[in-house]
Length: 255
Image 1 (spheres, one colour):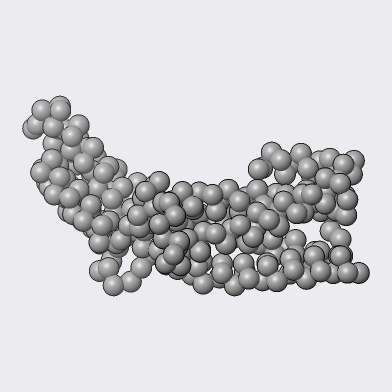
Image 2 (cartoon, rainbow, N blue to C red; image 1 turned 135 degrees about the vertical axis):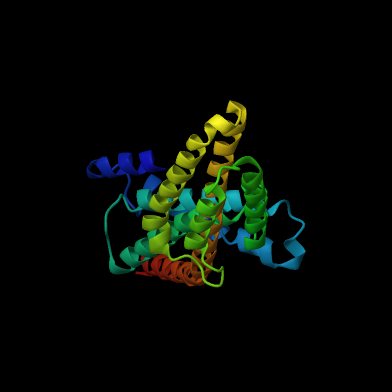
């Protein structure tokens, strides 16, 4: 899609496509059709009679495909140029919904198990953290290692009553996680003479897994809230898209 956008933008001066005839007009029909077929995914999810129509994950993959190819066809329909007022509004709405869909896919990726479509829960993430903590307690027996990792967990997740802020998750936690890992590794190296080499290697692996598990819980907490906010905005944007598309089609063919 990115390559097709670059090619279309670079060749727009050649005017291979014009919106009102030929391939340019056909691109408009294809784009609008694909954007309309996007509705099949929410229908599959919400209506009882459609719940046996295949796996939801497969429908979601098709939904994403149409959500990329449909706006691409609309861009080629417009020849990557602005036109009339109603056409510009419809184009902006199309690109906004497409961008919103890409953002939603990023959020979805963080709170759903890949391919299965089964939504994770914060309880799932914390259970994994508890398992990793027990492994660290068993493997990383050096004095202070578990204490250091526990301080990192408390600093990152707090008491669990509030979610992690986006600012801390993006700008602070990556640095604090590296610092906690470095301190834990230093403690392990100091006690490496007291244990076999394989045991030290397992302990280091357990430390890395523990820090990754803590960050996983923090990421999930953040992306779950972002996905909820995204859902509130995406549906109204989609309705606005269909409304402006209808106005554009009617205006073009009547006037």
